[in-house]
Image 1 (cartoon, rainbow, N blue to C red):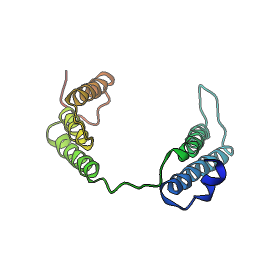
Image 2: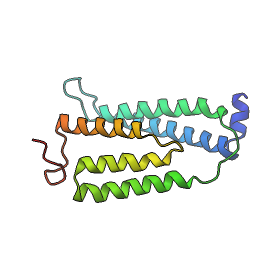
Image 3: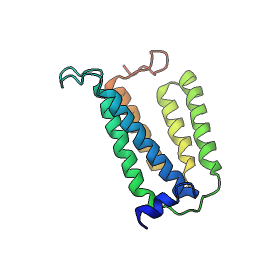
Image 4: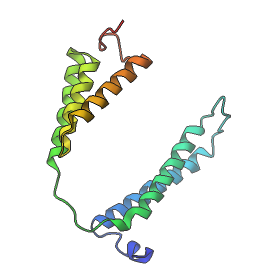
Length: 155
């Protein structure tokens, strides 16, 4: 499949949706780069107001180009709506909101990751445990606390 075939199918099925999306992401990245050129970038010690938009614009442009070259791999078949991930992620977010208020951050993290794992077909307790413990250690190690009332007192 060459570039003319890809561009000819721009409005058709899944390939067309991915093509339009990749062009939109690339365009947004180029727009961010163009806007960032009007601001000073600064130096490595003291970055200017244009450094972050320039970096994000470059990142978006690269992602858009990567998506564009990945388009031919997709078929035109569109799968049915996936209810399982939608319900699992929504329930995980709701449980996090409830648990962070009443049980603390660490219990909420275990609930969030444990419930969101149901979005996958194969549930892995090992992955849930490693991810949850790792995130809790990260939060405790860097002392990145949301507020004193939300975090269990570790010390």
